[in-house]
Every structure is written in C-alpha cells, then in structure tokens.
Length: 223
Image (cartoon, rainbow, N blue to C red):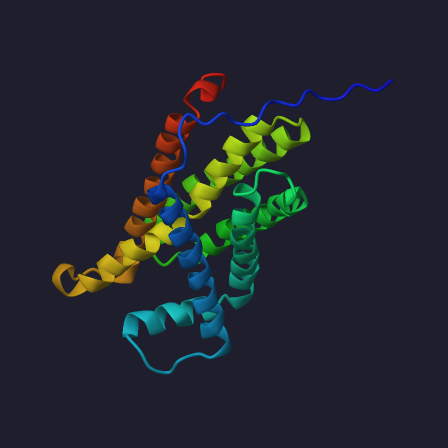
C-alpha cells in the first residue's frame, strides 16, 4: 500500500478580492501583453521615424533580437496563462499551471542575459538581479509545494512570483512619467530606466505582500 503526500487545505480568504485589486491585475496583464506585442511589431516592421529616444531603444533591442525573443515570447505565454491558472478554483487548468514553471524559468534565465546590455546600466542590472532572483525563488517554491500537494503554500508562492513578474507592467507608466517630464528633468532613458525598474518592481513586491497578509492573514501565520 503506497502512502500519499498530505494535501493542504485551499487558502482561506479573510475578505473577498476588491474591485481595485481585480482592475489592477487586469491592467497589468493588458500592459504586459501590449509591451511584448509592441516589441514584436518593432522587430517585424521597424519604424524609420519617431522620437529619437524610442528609435535608439528599438535599435538596441534589435541588436540582441534572438535573446530578446527568447525572453519576451515565453513571458507573453506566461502572462496569458496567469488568469486561467489563478482565477479558476476547480483545477480544470492545472495542466496549464505545469507549463508556467518551465516558461518562468526561461523568462528568468534570459532576463539575466538581457541585463548584460541594460539600458539603465548598473542601476537597472541591480534591479533585474534582485527582483528576477525573487521571481525565480518564489516560482521554485511554488513548484516544490505543488510536488508536495501543498496547495496553500503553492498558491501564495505563485501569487508572489506572478506579482513580481507583472512589475514590468508597473514600470511602464513610471517610464511614461519620466519620458513626459524629460524636458524638465533633462534625464535620458539611460539615466531613468534603472530608477523606473526599481520603482515598478518594488511597488508590486510590497503591494502583493500587503494584500496577501490582509487576505490570508491566519494562514500566513503558519509559514
């Protein structure tokens, strides 16, 4: 007779998911998809005109097109799978969840590679190293907990990893503010990209911790 690993209970929510959280989640998903699609279009149909800073960025990404594609395409699939995996509670998409682990690993590995030519220099590289490492750590924890059928800890770790990944969406409006105020600040993308990365990813990392501790307060005390 074989023994089975104990299955932990599903996470117990102290309160329903607020409308603002749902809206923020879907906005992050849409922005993340739009960022990838915009980059793919720029690869397929390079524009000869536009703001000089944007043309310079497009040229920088085209010079490392293969690694960029190996990063953004798995990231696109990961993001598309996220709502199906996290927002369904009956387990019908559990097989899609298993796809997220190799996809996330590919995203993380290639993120390290892309940081070699980071637009924002060492400030951006430091942000990538910190938050990409946190993303891979939480993803590895989720995978380990899934193997042990520990649904609570898997769910929490997966939420953390997804929130960190979606930090790339949060950086976009931050970058937009920097671009819009560049005539006043005289900051170039090389100067503000790193700060935008730190602001975006830090915001998401803090936000998910606050939300998790409010929603799963009693269960998180067991960690």
